Every structure is written in C-alpha cells, then in structure tokens.
Image 1 (cartoon, rainbow, N blue to C red):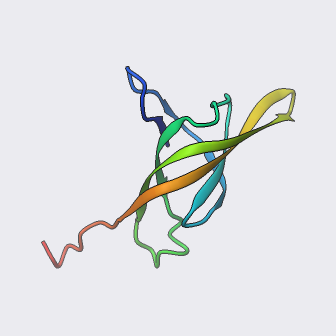
Image 2: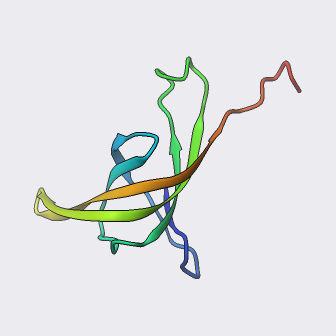
Length: 97
C-alpha cells in the first residue's frame, strides 16, 4: 500500500514491489508519480522469510525516478523511491498478552 504523504484527502494505491532494500524500494503502479513526491509505504513481508509470522514494514520516502512500460496494452509505471525512515511492526505474541 502506498500513500501520498501530502495530499488531502489522502490517496492510497496498491502497488507491486519488484525490489527492496533498507535504503530503497522499486514498485509498480498503474499511474505515474512525480519525482520528489513524499510517500508513506506499508509492506507485508512474505511469511516464507519471517518464519510464519505476519510482519509489516512502514516506511517514509521520496520518489526518485519513474519508468513507464507497456504491459498488455496498458501503461505501468515503475517507481524508484528512496526510503528515508522505516519501522518494522511485528504482532504481539499471544503468550506475552
């Protein structure tokens, strides 16, 4: 889920992540975003890498680059974004409750 940080009302978009690191994320959207746009990003990590637990990553960042491609006759936009800050959110264990 991608949220534009400075819009009112808030806009949310579903995105497909193609590449991620601690300093950036590359994802695809059905619409372009302008370079410099501030973003709030929420990702759900695959359970295969989190030992079966649901783990979310919430990040804030900024669009660096936009690549337009054509898939099945429709424009798809690859968004390269710098991650400026992130938090990892793990669910509480039922034993700790």
